Length: 581
Image (cartoon, rainbow, N blue to C red; front, side, top):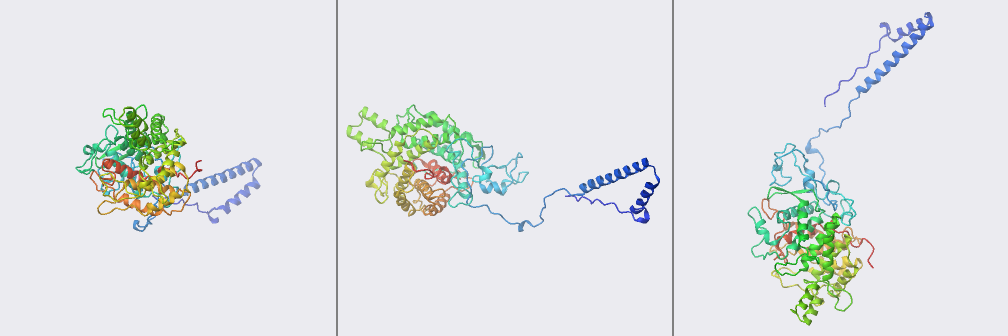
């Protein structure tokens, strides 16, 4: 900044050179010898001259004052204090909806954004020094930092249980919340899902062979990847985006480094939801295959309905409301009657309408009909309960009796030790078999599912079974073994959800007795199993198979791990309000 030369003050005149003292004598003589008119003129002249000198002096003083500036330290850069961002960050539920690139916290705060047109290399990772070498500004054109409270996220103000709910972690620094590492993993996982979305908007295990890029596959040759679960996988993938706060109209985009391509999130979500909506039948079912005479499959129905409910709840756009409510109605009509003859029960693979149709067609006898009408399992029941909970949060119509029936089933399959059976109390605490990956390690997955059914159906933090279940879960913390047989993403997801609700940062219990140790083990394991090799298609995905991914494949394993890492803000705490009567 150029220096402003100082303005010199006028020097005083010495008395012997006609200074102020001599001037005063002249004035006195004039007063004695001049007529009154001359005296008046002289007095006015003196006054005017004095005022002029005061004005000029003040103006000169004003010009003398240097302009306000910000002091710039000459301290060497290597001596400047380094401010580290907090490891636990404040993650708001809804990202700010503007046309910006989604980047991680570290990427957003480490480089200077630029609006200048660039020829940046989209195959390079944001933050890579070589990625900014050709940018005039010395920075990248990135935008929304995931997980940064004031930078990238805000509440939309819409009257929605999803958009107006309190973020799941409260403020910066609260223990047990999301970290920079978890949010970066979510971003990379969502980018992987965008890369593997079909052009019609769906996600399918069967299409991976055509969508994998870069000469590296995201699937194992022994996996049986079919299109049977397309509706469920599409719903699960959509939930991963909706859980991060991205809706059908989101303007943000992500850069897929494998394809060197920018992909806007909103159209991807919209295409997926539209694909589901167009497949829905009049009775609300999404997965009935008319061309293959395939009946609705309840896993698919629960996931597709949940996605549609959250799409409506997040956006409050009525275009999705009818589809969501019809999906809910299908699930309600699919619920089995309580074997006692009073009330309702749980759910299994087939709906009541499917079973009743078999009886009409005489493909089953009366005994088999009665057996199938009582048939329910803990896994499908938990997914349906979560779909109904999303519907309830979205202010769709869900009768209380549906949750009461789920609770009755959950109580029946639970023994006095808090162990939960898959099909009934006799199998409580026993491994669930019948999958090609039965050689994988056994975990108390049913206990986690049973906890979630209770938490989201009854909302009772004093339920003693919850503590019995939690004690089982922390005895089997997530771990990654050398042989890979310890991987069980399904267990990790539901146990994470259950323990976060029970005594996580937003639970009224506030004990952190279970959540603290689980959260650390879970984040370590989930992040460790994510693909991180640059310039390969598995980058950002979870392609290592687990116990349950033999048919649904990496679409399932990636989406469910992203949802696990979104647990901090996806649901408000179920115990936050008054206990349901």
